[in-house]
Every structure is written in structure tokens, then in C-alpha cells.
Amino acid sequence: MNNQTNEFKAKIAIVTGGSRGIGKKICQQFAEQGSNIIFNYTRHHKEAKETKDEILKYGVNCDVIKCNLNEEQQIIDFFKEINSKYKKVDYLINNAASGVQKLASELETKHWEWTLNINARAPWLCSIAASKLMKDGGSIVNISSLGSKKVVPYYFSVGTSKAALEAITKYLAVEFAEKKINVNAISAGLVETDALKSFPNKKSMISDSLNNPSGRSLTKADIANLVIFLCSKKSEMIKGQTIIIDGGYNLI
Image (cartoon, rainbow, N blue to C red; front, side, top):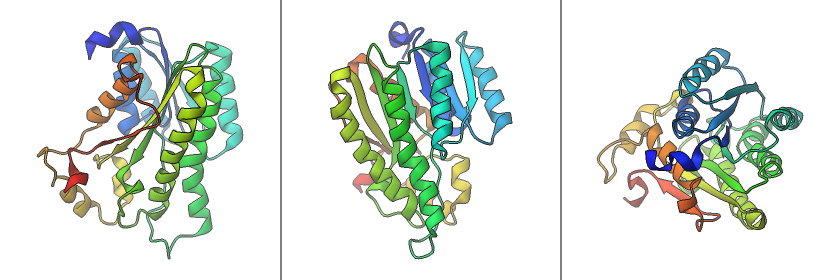
């Protein structure tokens, strides 16, 4: 994707949950294109430092801010810090996600509130805050999952929160269009990350995901590449859409 380097050079990308997994790969892809990076973390301080060190090797700036997206005031403070240093941003990737892997009948109210706060409320709040800093327009990409439409075992709270996120995507796309801010979502199939460790049925999920027309598993780079495209000028006429990337798994 080097032909897009000039478009992204010296731009500012915020990636929530950027210290590891898919978020880290997204940070790396933006940095490779010449964008300056801002990402948050909550608990994984060591991974956050390692990711920052890797990003700096691309010759761009990288700011790491501790922010618990479950707390509204911390989100407010997160963007205050960004505004005080940069005054503007160009891209927001709402990647951070969490959840409790239980059946609906086993879930407690606190589990529901935690999952919805991080997976739906936080992207909404972050998008509103970021939009005020996108003075020359920009792009927002929300990372969803197939569980928003397909029933996945033990995925009740996460699946419903991702369905909410996809609805948020549509509404914000219309509201922000006049500001020249594109808003889209990516519905990703299964990718092997640390997040999978919490699933009781991890092995079966991995084996099932390989049963797709592409003949290979989805990678973090696949998702990061799509994020870059949705933030590029080439995707200008794609608005409020949820793009499925799963190697065709959802088709069979």
C-alpha cells in the first residue's frame, strides 16, 4: 500500500486498544504510511511500551495514553490531552473491545453494562470527541464482528453490543457527512489473538473459521489493510457501511 504514503503522511490516527492484537497491527499500518499514532491502553503497560517503541522506528510520533474506556471522564480527559498537543486529528479507529463470554441466561447486569459501555458507548463518545478535532474532515472506522448478525455460542453480550455499534455507524455516517467525516465499520471474522483465550469453545471456533472459500485463516494484517482503505480517499463514497471480511465464511 506504499502508493498511499503521501495521503497519510504526517496525519494523526487515534487507535483505541492499540497496544496489542489487531489494534497494534492497525497502528503499525498507519505508521508505515507515515501517520503519527495515538493509542490508549488500560492494563497492559508493558505491551503498550513495546508497541510504542516499535512504532517510533517508523520515524513517526507515537503517544500512549492510559484510558479506561468504561469511564466517561477518562474518555473526556483522553481527548483533552490529545487536543492540548495536536489540536486536530484525521482518523479514529474504534478498535478496543471487551465482553463476558456467557449465555444470556447466565449473564449478570454488571457484565452487560461493562460490555455495552466499552463496545458501544465508548465508540460513540470517542467519535463525538474526535469529530470536533477533525477540522479538515476525516475518517472513523469501527471494528465489529460477525457475532452482530450470526449467533455465536457464549457471545450474547458482545454480539448485541456489536449490533449496536453497527447501528451507531449508520447514524454517525449521516450526521457527520456534512463535516466531510466518513464513518464505516468492519465486521471481521475470527482472528487468533489473546482475546480468544476467554472463550470456552476456542478450539472449535478456530477450526470452524478455517472452513471458508479462501482456504486460509483471517489475519490481523487483512483487517488493518481494510482499515487503511476505508480511511483513504478511494473510499470517499462508502458511508455508513459494515464491510464483512472473513474469507467468505459467512456465505457457507
